[in-house]
Length: 155
Image (cartoon, rainbow, N blue to C red):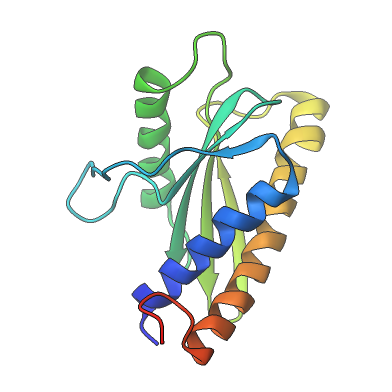
């Protein structure tokens, strides 16, 4: 099982499971990926949350997150704000999902700091919990599919 196969399987599981959490999560249609640098695509998944009125770009990373990735996600958020955001909508919230051995970490990235109790407790924490739980489930499902031969590339 290669890292690419695992990545594809995890992303497929996340597409389904995040949308199942709430009808407010809409997956943006897959578009031809473009990159800012030659190393990384802009994002792996792009959701729009109807209630929060914001885009949520998601990037899956194997390994620990570092400051370069956080700055890279902030650049993506700036691009999305400029070219994709709905007028009157809120700034996008970036999510970096980190998978390292048997651990998962969710890094929330915003262009501005969270202001006050409501932002931190009613938006940031629940969003991190949703993605952390679904990432863990997606990894388990992806491993099962790849071991049984149902994953990308199939039987």
